[in-house]
Image 1 (cartoon, rainbow, N blue to C red):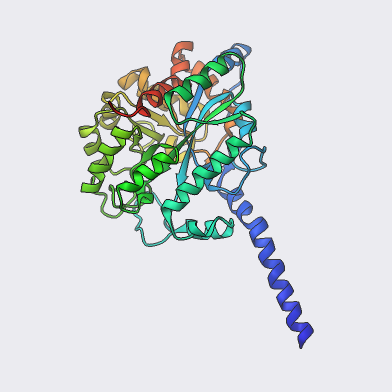
Image 2: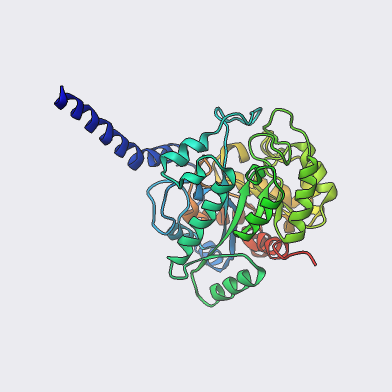
Length: 389
C-alpha cells in the first residue's frame, strides 16, 4: 500500500511540474497564432523605404504571457529580436488584468476571470492572484527587468525626452526599441482614483477605460449595460489628462466614446481595432467616432486580426487605413496590431514590411507611409505623456 501511495504522489508531482512548465506555453500557442494568408511581393524600393521608417505600434499584449521578452520565441507575435527584425522603434505594451469566461464581442459580465488561473499557472507572485492592481504593477516590473537586462536594446519610455533620445539614437544607427506601458481597462484601479497615480508612477502612460465588461470607470462595447462614464470615470479622464496618461477608447461603449470625445482637452486614441465602414463588427469605430478622435488631434490604430479588418491580409489593413485617411486626413491613423492579444494574424511583428508594401500598393506616398507606420503615433505620444501645465 505504501508503494502504491508513493506512486500516486509521484504522478501528482510529475503532473504538476508538467502543468506549470508547459501548460502556459501550450495555452498561448493556441491563442496567439500566425496563419497562412495572402502577402504582397516586397520590392527593393519598399525595403529601402521600410528601413527608413520610425515604426510605432500602439498595442501589444505580450506582458500577459510567461515569456522572456529578450529571447526569440517559437510562439506568439512579439519579442525583442522580432521587433528589431521588423524595424520597430516603439512598441506599446498593454497590461491585461481580467477577461471574462466565454469572452465575446456582444455581452459579458464581470463575474468571472480567466486571468486568475493564468496568473497561478504561470507562477506569478501570489499578490497578483487576487489583485488587478498588482497584476498591472507586476507587468510594469517585468518590462523594467527586461529593459535592465537588455544591454540598452530595450528602453522603457516615460517622458518625451526619453522618446526623443531614442529616436535620435535610432537615426544615428542604433537598433534600440522603445517600450511604453498601457492598460487594457482601468478595472485595475480597483475603484480608487489614487491608484491611477500609482499606475502612472509605475510607468503607465496610456490606458483604455474599459475592456470586455463594464467596470467602475466606464461602459464597455462588450458589457451588459454598455453605459457611459461613471462619476469616477469623469474624474479619471480629467486626472489622466492632467498627469500625462493618454486616454484610449478601444473597447469602450458608444456612449462612453461620445462622452470622452465631448470632454477631451487632449488627444484621444483608439489604440487597436478597425472601422465599421470596412469591417462591420461592433468593436470597430463608426465614421462619426473617427471624426471625433481626429477633432481631439488623436489617432486611430488599425489592427491586423479578422474582427478588426474582416481578414488577415495586409491589403485589408491598408484598405482600413485608407478609409480613415480619406475621412479625416492622413494625420489621424496609425498601427494598433493587438499582437499577442489572443488573436490570429497573417504575420508577426518581424514582417511589418508587408504592411508597408500594402500601403505602397494602394498608392500611399512615402510621406503618408511615414506618418501611418509611426509618425502620427509618435507625435501623439510625445504630446500626450507630458503633464498638463
